[in-house]
Image (cartoon, rainbow, N blue to C red; front, top):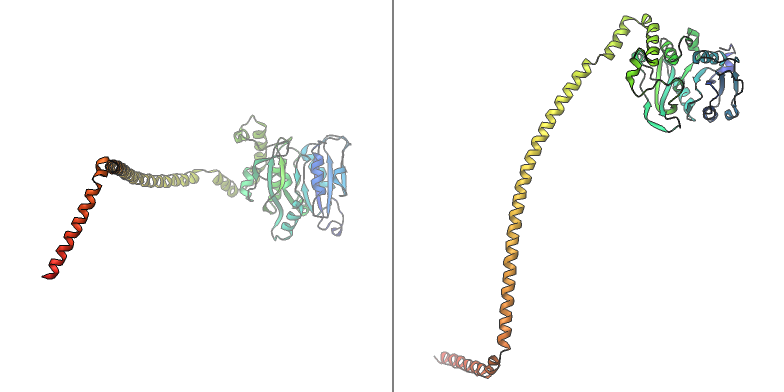
Length: 359
């Protein structure tokens, strides 16, 4: 670390970018250049030892190139970056990842507003090689016991106070992978971490130390590179952990309580399903009864419709018969007779009325 005065590096953020000179470096540098936090320096570590790195995408940000002329391991490159950093706060950003424009400012605000956390990290979106978002986000809340079991914080998600380095925290150059996990374990001995559940960092799968595998069983196989890396971490750290912490770790791994809870949940769900099935059967009976009533009603309607059609047909036949009578020759010839009959009937009724009045 630099020995500059506190006034010179107050609130400055050093972003250490380890690079092998891959094309994705330009996107990583652009994401640093776009930060809305003003006081940032870039420490660009030439891990490939090529001396020829295009850093134009960094814009006007102060940039220091760290190169030894030889290839550096991941841990050695990280330590070289730490040695060259001047900032009060430090962040790593490998050349195949990137961050949103408010990533640094959000984490600085979190650290300056915290009384006990000297490290803060955001949630991180996993992407494919092309940079398209996948259906996975690193967003675990901080748990020091969980950190003993797994590395769940991508390296560029965290911003930490450089004062933590005074405790001797360094990258262990014995590790080819999981070097960041080992470093977080070192930091966690001296501070808590604050998690900001906001996605401002992006982790591209398929990097040179991609430890986020689809088949988690690979991490526990002795002949797998991930299994070997995890074994190396535990060989280093188990002697340092107290029995209390190891017991807490085992308790977190113990699935018996979870199985009991799941068993109780399953039985509860089975009871609910049985109740629902009983209710469904009752409803089925009601539906069958309603269907029978509907069928009976439909049958009655059909009968009424048939009767109505019969009555209509009968009325039509009567009308046809009446029309035939009215149009017949005999009806027309008998017309005068019917009129005389009506006259005689009228006179008879009149005479009867007068006789009744005389009485």
